[in-house]
Image 1: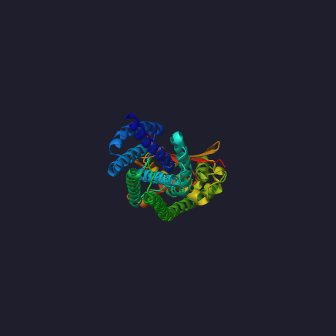
Image 2: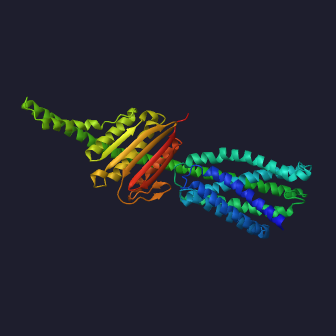
Image 3: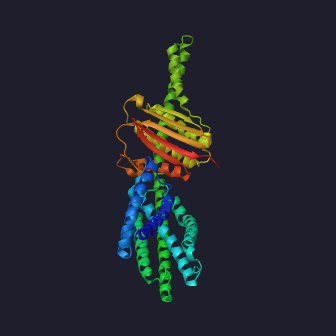
Length: 454
């Protein structure tokens, strides 16, 4: 009895190992939750305890289709909950990634069964003798390693590239549920009934018709999993195209706002120039009787040009100077220390959108603050070794809720106000960067990290 339980435990542990390999691949771009490794290890311990108990259930009900379906759904639900615990993402996003991982695991498993059944029919394994189990494991895990690499390159990597920085909609969630249903039901039903038809050992058949049916089922499962993964990838790609449309709409709206800022800046410069011309005329009339306070007043008018920002990046200089002048006009202290020369790896359009959104979000927050001493924005761009760090800090009033690692807008117009932070994350992910945002002591902190290694 104990030996039987060990066999079932080995089956479950191997399944969990394969599943977690694909979990690691499909979730590698998700935002990790605080204390990620503690959550991962603690959750893994709980899953192992449950796996030990599931072995007894497998022994009693694993020979029936419904029993096996129930076991694998339970294992999937528990592991998906574990993954959700480890990542700061919405439940549909995590479940989507877990379903893709399950389909990929089943695809590799069914591909191996197709190869194995063909070898059984040709008698490849008859001479393995007492080392059968060892040779089986070596063959399976060698095949599994190759299959993981192939499935990752063909299906998972393109999917991750398209879904980076994007939110998943209900259509994608429904597809994820469909993928889970196909993989669990097909795998469980086939394995149960063909195990009963096997002779000597599982997947070895004396009647050719049984072999053909088994291979047909294996190939059908492979096709279903592959089609499900392709459909998932296409859906994610379509979602990315929709996001690009939203991005363009947001860019148009942002251009309108930038026009208003530029207009106000030009008005400010015109007013200052008029004041300077008037004051110079007054000084000329006074001649040698120039009062010191008049000179100080003139210097104050000219001080607007101190708002010019020089970073070493001409494009960034123009953007930050204009934002600095706007802050000067609206009583906002804008502190900037930026090494713009290290930003040459970014396209000008992405550079404008990234820093434009960062500063505009900060401006929106501090403009609502009445206390002058808290109307402050700090922006730092600096390099540390092979890493480029972008830090933005600003005060804010009220509360900030977060979803998926990003602050949730409190504005009713979510199309425009909500897309600013998402567009920042899209650009950061485009250049393989990392973004974190958090609130501490009434200050909103935004940190971005890029690798400068070539």
